[in-house]
Image (cartoon, rainbow, N blue to C red; front, side):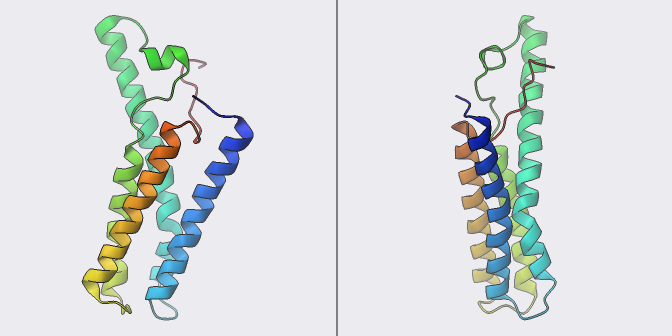
Length: 149
């Protein structure tokens, strides 16, 4: 079930901007002043959101293509306007990007040490990805209209 455009936009903007703020606040709390890791913290979750959305669309497009080749018709989710599959890509991308960020921050002088810092960032990425996945599956993130093209 898709939601109204205004609600979708507000939630998408909140998740995108909120991810940047959360990443920045966490890197500020864990690193020393002037660390380049703060820039990575600001950009990591929004980048994971963008890449996850593209992978979600790509997976749905591959599913449509495979279904067309196999059965000669569009799959049910493409005809009914339902949410396409593949939103789990958010979990994969945000966990992967946050793991890389965690290694960068943990290698820089951090307040917790290497393993706790890495664990915090992996947990942050997984949590962010799960939230994005759940929002996408419940129609709160924008879905490209593949049938309309």
